[in-house]
Image (cartoon, rainbow, N blue to C red; front, side, top):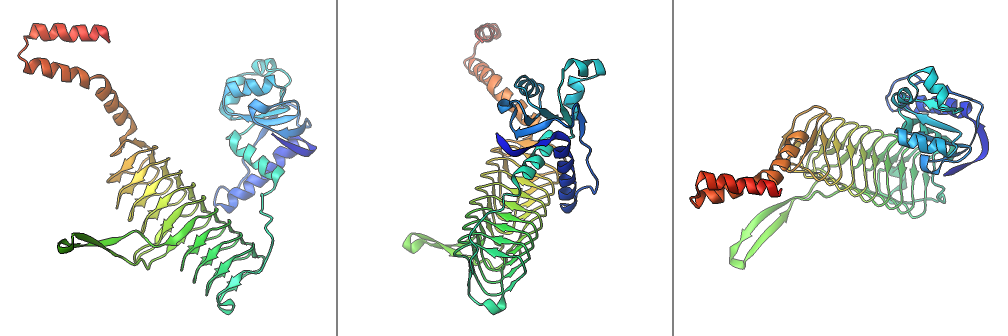
Length: 394
């Protein structure tokens, strides 16, 4: 629960959140218009805190995505509840049903989580880090270009020919190698490492201890049988990593540089903690890459793709626009474009994979038993009886 320093009216909170959301979406390339949020009830009701449905109490503003959560928040006396249009229609299909809900204050919005997150941002600010501002260590100060409003935490290293756009914040212990370029209004968290030539767009975040642009993992094998050896001869990777605008990269994530071409992370893509992106990978725009995903070198991912936790892409795998790769699945070849869920290893359409799993679990043991009886030369009648008995047991 987040307590407000002073109470605010519900209408003022919703109005400020609506304006803030409109501005933020416009910057991110979204619609340049307000998304309406409708209040049913008393817009002057005072909000004292923000909470989940389970923590709701008198004076709380919370959100509910399901009827059960709504009932829980209502029964605990929440001052107002943000609900979706669909849930509102379910709760109040007509005026009589709305009246039967009692003296509730409802905010109807297209996506309750989205509006609530904007309200959280208004209350808590942008959570800008308050690092002690110090002068970084410059390898060659004269060759660097640092625009106005750039701040540095303690123990930052800048190589030669580093460029940083205005308003960017560089956290403690960050290492920026020669030729690194960072755009405007970025936030580079403590301990991040950007190797030589890495390019970062505007409004990006790179979280703590991530490593961007380290050497790719590539070797040529040279047999040496007379010594009982297989020598792994290293490929030097001289490409770089290009991170486009509005990308966020989680903590402890590694994105390798290309061999001669570049590894590219498309605009608006969000990458979780503990992700490995190999050399020469091309990740499209507005993708979501969840924790422990591994993308081998030369993988190609289209726009708006979701790679869910622990999924993996084989060397040179291709995933088309809008595809969803479910957790712990493996892409060995190509996935066509389209908003479909793919699962298993190698991936198949989810319905096909689940059907196969059910068949393997339920039908394969029966066919195995039938084959054993058949090979023993049992009569059809004996086989029928044995299979019928097995069916009765199950």
